[in-house]
Image (cartoon, rainbow, N blue to C red; front, side, top):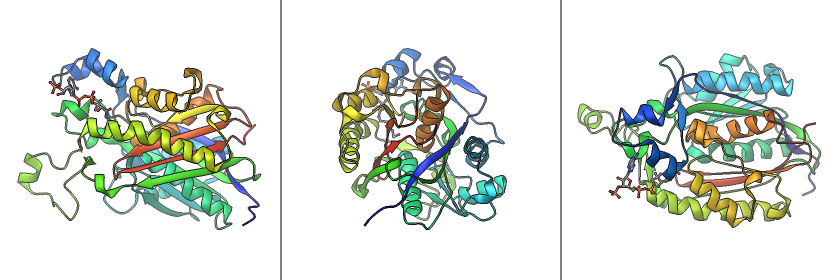
Length: 332
Ligand code: UT7
């Protein structure tokens, strides 16, 4: 099929809570050390939402900033896709709350549940809608408040996560720019590796469930680590191949920020030098679906992205899910 348009990123924005929690703060809560967290993960501090801040409030603020950056009024949005694992409610969708908050009256709004791969899945979906002509302006948001769902007594997980949101506005651009390709995959066989066991229909909330903290994030960290190291490189190479590009063409690699060692392994698999790898995990921890759009917004703000640059986004997470997008930056 001859494609006449691609989906370009017209603007980006982010919002993070003001409150900073350092590794030293965590030393007072659980049996951990700054040294362990830094050397095993690369994280120094993370942002923690206030009781009033939710995934939708952070997502709405990131969206307003992305719309302003794109110079697109909210009323022009055809669709809002929110990637979140920590929605305000089980349902309705957090995307609908964001729609209401920003006044995007015409938009169809729904959530994607793909955990840390959510933004990559969202970009792939938005791009398909725009390429097929079914939508012209699509907002993709990654918004998380993981601090409200971690078990603050489990040192193996509570030190890893942080809160925040990032957003991107997409619209038609020339066929050789914008989202050039996406590669995605899932393996439900690993569904128990990262899971929030209770609160759905399988394990309803009871006093016993709350006592056992089954309504909190559970993760088999070292198994996820091994999966991530392999899948990150594989899916990036797959997406680059689909775009007829090689790792040598990559200008900036913006991976999901889970662990510096995982990011370095993926970068080394692609032969990328450190200056082509974006890392802000030290300041935000793992913000799940928000980590890539937050990273992209910071990279753009810092002047690390210019028109024609080839960007690679890659995520992996609960599901199991994984995915990568190759984007040729289309903004001046
Ligand atoms: O966003 C996608 C989802 N998540 C991820 O991508 C996370 C992927 N996994 C990881 O990043 C790493 O597996 C972790 C950072 C979670 C853990 O690092 P690890 O090198 O795989 O450590 P481990 O789980 O094998 O634990 C090693 C030791 C254990 O002690 P013993 O059994 O050797 O005595 C843990 O109990 O480290 C201990 N430990 C801690 N010690 C101090 C685990 N958490 C902590 C902690 N502070 N916070």
